[in-house]
Image (cartoon, rainbow, N blue to C red):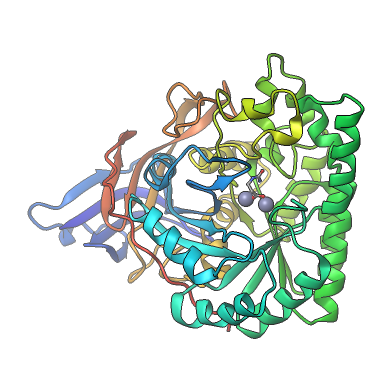
Amino acid sequence: MGLLIKNGTILTALDEIQGDIYCDGDTIAAVGGDLSDRKKTGDDVIDASGQVVFPGGIDPHTHFELPFMGTVSADDFADGTAAALAGGTTMIIDFAIPAVGGSLLDALSDWHAKAKKCVADFSFHMALTDPSDKVLGEIPLLVKEHGISSFKAFMAYKGAIGVDDEALIHFMQTVSKAGGLLWLHAENGDAILERQTRFIAEGKTGPEWHEPSRPAILEGEAVRRALTLAELYDAPIGFVHMSSRDAYQAYAEARVRGQEAYAETCPQYLVLDDSVYQKPNFESATYVMSPPIRPAGHSDWLWKGLINGLIHTIGTDHCPFRLEGQKTMGKDNFTQIPNGGPGVEHRIELMWHYGVGEGKIDRQRFVALTSTNAAKLYGMYPRKGAIRPGSDADIAILDPTASRTITAKTHHSKCDRSLYEGFELKGAVTHVVAGGRLQLVDGDLKAEQGAGRYIPRSARS
Ligand code: URP
Ligand code: ZN
Ligand code: ZN
């Protein structure tokens, strides 16, 4: 079965043209002017006049069905990838997180089992929580035999999945030698633990103490320390969910010195500020995530990084916990509130509205940040992240004149709260094609459980 998308403004990370796209099965077959003569009997046709057509989004940072802080994140792989498709994201990369002391290969098969329900394509990063010989020995196997070329270690979460500098050094050396890329959750775990313990002892128990317990200076310190180690051990390094001026400046200085380093930020750090922690009735717990939402002003630095190209990707860190029954686990102690929030559904429209709509980034940078850069960095380009013959038929269509009001009442996530409740956006995703399947039609989701495919990724060259 084929699909003809007609008369759209086709955006890529490099340029834009007016024209048609013809998809044959799960692959893009032709891109150009008038492709009407390619249409066969029975093919679907979408009229994209007045709309922009771009590579399906890649969200490189999700946590579906994640066991974390005594509970499990609220969206499974079917819910999460359905929410992704509804917002124009056709592929996600989730984090497989082994138990401390557990085997990476076991964690990988657990995540594969959970991801069978995916309605969109998927891959995994592997988290490194334990520098045992067994784990270090499995890293090259994951890269060479399982298509997993990216890893994450946590400098935060001391006493749980966090690791110390000695472990980091082992991970950096082993991952880089294996042709992988190590990403870090950069926050100083020791100082956070000291502050959390002291705050609780002082009776500072509410969600408004979450940000002060892990201030931006502790993210900046961790980024600087990791960069120093990465330089010493000659390893490329990346920083996920960068949230602050302190982290950005430490990172940007290293980039200017010529160090090989990469960065991801998330919409919540670009469009929210720490006033969210003043919301009444424990609603503020919705925003308890790590790193926390920062005071006003920090986001300006992250936008600078998006504009000058030093920040490469936009992930969501989608890790939803329901306010009722999950976030309330920390009603009397903010350190027990499960960390994380939803977002996979709104990444593309938020970046369109606040990035392109407000004139901060052009449409090519929008495509690069939401899709193409992730495809390149994570070893999937040009299969993913491109609109060209031979690429996967993963395509999003957005009507720049349409509006969207975000609310948990209508979003596809199972979370009972949205980080962006009531936000009114200009520009709405109308159609989504995933692997050649028409999954969103005029805003109506027709997701097919199990249709998502595992996408193995190549090692760094
Ligand atoms: O608060 C967050 N970010 N929860 C998910 C785990 C992580 O650190 O990414
Ligand atoms: Zn993290
Ligand atoms: Zn995360």
